[in-house]
Image (cartoon, rainbow, N blue to C red):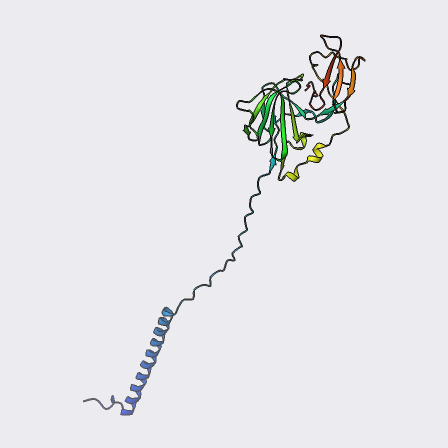
Length: 283
């Protein structure tokens, strides 16, 4: 039997019961809220970072390579200088100057002569003035001439195709020459042109060729010097009073000069072909 002093009235029991029930409900609610928050945090989608947009630079259009030049000229004796220029020139045994239709380039005998431009051999041969020579045709009506040669290179003959830089011949001292050198000409048809306007240069089109400038001839007469006079010509003949000069209608000069074998001989000096070079050379 329970003591009456320990027993609670029925209303107090109900209050205590409901109070405990309320505390339990609050605790359960809190626990449920925490659990729900954790679950929501785990299941919520994670926002991906916005993609970085890198602007694409437009690709530069590659420039088309320039077409190769239509005309390109190299020196026939690379590294050597012209020592008798194109233009009017007077030889020691002449009283008047005449046109030197090319340039003279000093070089030792046997030096390799190179083709100045692509072309086809037009002629090879021997001339009393030019000596051994090779003539090459090029596009645009141009021709080049290599003279006073020792001999043409092997295989170089009429019809041979030559690339720029191919060996044409070997330097010599043939023909009307007083020293080992190369006489080099460039012509447009029959007109002689100054080679220095072409050598080492390239031209995109035929219209770019300096034909007008290269065809001009200065009035200044270049006085040539030679270390050896041609056979049969006496030194001082031009000033001895025994030389007679006559200019013909075709532009040639006829000179009567002393020779070793006879007191006086008449020697026609061709105006259209080179005869002498500076610095100890003569064509």
